[in-house]
Length: 567
Image (cartoon, rainbow, N blue to C red; front, side, top):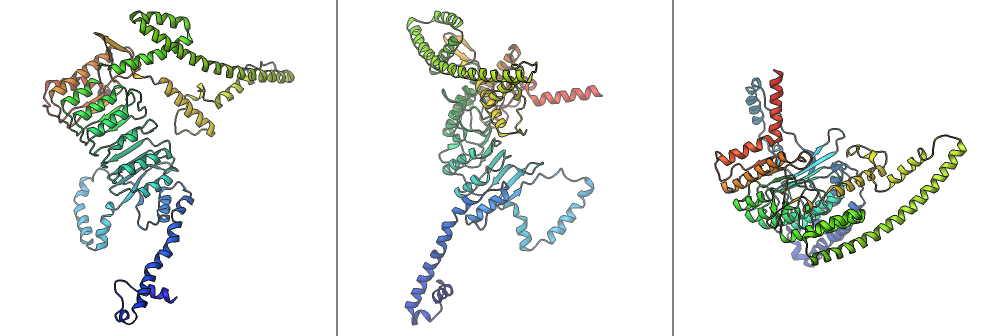
């Protein structure tokens, strides 16, 4: 007790005068006790603190869980979870305008204390702003602005975000992300709810520009915003490769915002290369960058018929061979006839190579088909046995209904519901918010949706092509609907390239019979505030061509017609 008393009473900055001279050795021991005692007391607490967050079971309330986990990790001052403030309503009628200055003057005159000044700056304190669902008050979106998100905070998020079943978006604005913390953030995204589809990382420049990792093949992000991140041509190259290459393609990303970055002509060319074989991106913004005519022409090139490279032509032939081998297995007579027609223009060496590839692929497919037929035979035998049992039961009961029309159909339906086969009765119920009766039905719906997406997705290299002077031309990317190139450095040279794109796509949508079913091309294109005059004839012509394609202008025109007809 005496050692602890001396340790508590002693202060290393202000020792008592006279004690050092009379008992120097005692004060040295007291100093050692004061230095050694606190680590001995704090070490067990420090060992227990990392274990406590793992033992804590999150409740699904972000405010409660985040506060509890921060406390268990030793944080005394941590951001509070608050509801995101709504924008103020449109301002005051004329009768109350004269009263407002008087009220403000009264408030300002009475707000001279330090506490009132601090309360006015609550907005600038670190918080976690959330937007809630109106019905059940569950967290829908998370906004973090202006404070550094460290590795330990992301570890807390990895525990308290997965229970949020309705989470749809995460927004990080100037949170000091690094390449390491970005990797940790990407690792926690699969743990979150399947409803999470939007990620916004704005004002977070990274040295290695590893934003492309958010667009991996296993990514479920549909909307990605990377504004104001100092992304240059190297970062654009990584993002373009994440959009698509010859053998890989992102099939989930729908919108990508790259505004307010440092992307130039070279970077725009990489983004254009990514758009060559990407058929999922609908919305792209490259506003407020450094793109000139060369990059603009690269982007315009992929939106109309463009020539395939040698490697793309080789890959297209390989895909056609694989497709032909499958058709040959399904219908041998028709496939042989097609091969004889296709082989007319090929050399003998190419025919021999194609035959070898076809034989090997057919052999592999034969093996898989034998396995599948063996399994199907076993299933048919079991079905027959069960059908016999049903017949016996029906004969005993004396009912006149045939077993094939009655119980057998129900058994088949239950069998197919357990597998991965899509069920026609469940196709209309695709709504994510609808609650099914059991977990099995939910898994069946998800699997059926994945199967449908896999079958409907066609490799762009197998799309219709045009042959000109011995070259192969793909008809261009018509899936991209929105392109924003506001405030770049494009002159009339690049403007002419986009005018040709708009002309071609407008003509194609009119002439093509399947335009209503398939993609139609750009519906919105912005080239304003570039290095050409707004009164340029080409710019005015492009706007006139885009006006009937713009869905917003169509809606306004319909409203005006409805108002005119009503009057």
